Length: 485
Ligand SMILES: Cc1cc2nc3c(=O)[nH]c(=O)nc-3n(C[C@H](O)[C@H](O)[C@H](O)COP(=O)(O)OP(=O)(O)OC[C@H]3O[C@@H](n4cnc5c(N)ncnc54)[C@H](O)[C@@H]3O)c2cc1C
Image (cartoon, rainbow, N blue to C red; front, side):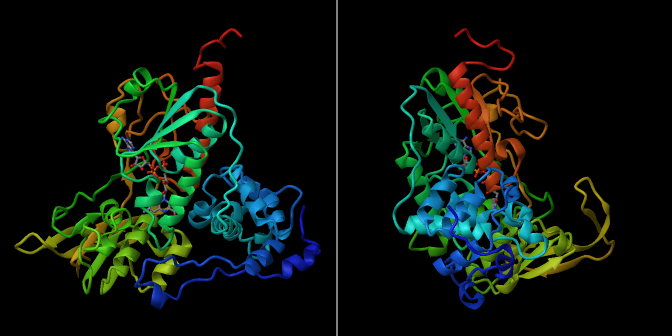
């Protein structure tokens, strides 16, 4: 029941509530979260802006189909816990997606209000109720069906694996998640920094899944510690979901990439996010000592933005983002770019490194770049960057981070030869059912699509879970006749 009695005209007059943010001058020195979350008053006011459309088109923009109008109505009725439970029916990680989803191109991009005014702050509201629920210590866990006796192994504990685990365990299947690293969460833990997504929140959401009955096994590298065949034949799993992500860094293949001081974004971010290198020597993992140094990050996506903002927080004197197109083409979220600029990050656009230069001891001293201009649109529809002959210049830096995207880690594929992969090494899966070519094995998330988003990985996890349920119920695999009743 909605508590919103305002006529639509009045609703439209309410301005979108701003997200309270930590001051840029303060936050550039700390890893505490930049966005502070709406207050109860802010969230209730924002919820009152919702037009409660008969056909809520916002939902069509949400890859997991969160019942947005329903949960917003519960907020206006003052039932924040009810609102959180409503979201959890479709999304097991609301405190995370409320923070990291590119809402501007999804739910909020479809909001009718956005045609004339600012769209409803769906992400802000999702985050608010999930945080409220956590702070109250009352996570609204869904009901769990009686045990089916079927067992599912999930490989990888990123958003794809976790969302599939949430659905499967709810339906009564026994679920074990195998993770190569020593902590659960995938990119949510080792990639996205604390100042955007506090790790305590990831751990809390993972705990909720544990309470629902999901079993987690860390430090298990499938393909080495155990293979998919062993899981199915020796350990008796009835189905397997591969959700191993796309965590293999790409390098530039230019001279000097081996120099000390050149990092992949994966390594740089893992050291800080997962291994607490920002607290060295309290924690024993070191990272490049950025204090007082000039550093550069190469790339224009979320990863590049996270790396450059992390380096700034580690005390870099100057932090420069080198991107070969212009700011308008940057794939990173607009909010991240804005925050980065506020924090003093320099954007060096229309430039591309051609070599890393070092001293006699093999330490990086500079990046040699070439200026670019935009030419004709390429396959991606974006204007392609073209080098301007003779325009090379050098940027002195002590550390450089390469953040040019990632590829598929081949380990699981190479140890499962009867599971087909595509040209780029990603797992070939039927787009509707997410079945692979190997009976009983499904795949979801970045390991199928290549690097995408948290919510798309979660949506794929749910699709795979539904398909696994169907397989476990019917025993049917492609092309086979239904088994006799
Ligand atoms: C730095 C960074 C910032 C990002 N920011 C955003 C953002 O703001 N918003 C957004 O929507 N998306 C963002 N993304 C993208 C998003 O995080 C990914 O699309 C998403 O995490 C993919 O989920 P996944 O479950 O497929 O894989 P992952 O999250 O990559 O998880 C895969 C897991 O599988 C494990 N694994 C791999 N191989 C094995 C094996 N052989 N055995 C056992 N375990 C294995 C890995 O250790 C990992 O924990 C970002 C990505 C990065 C790298």
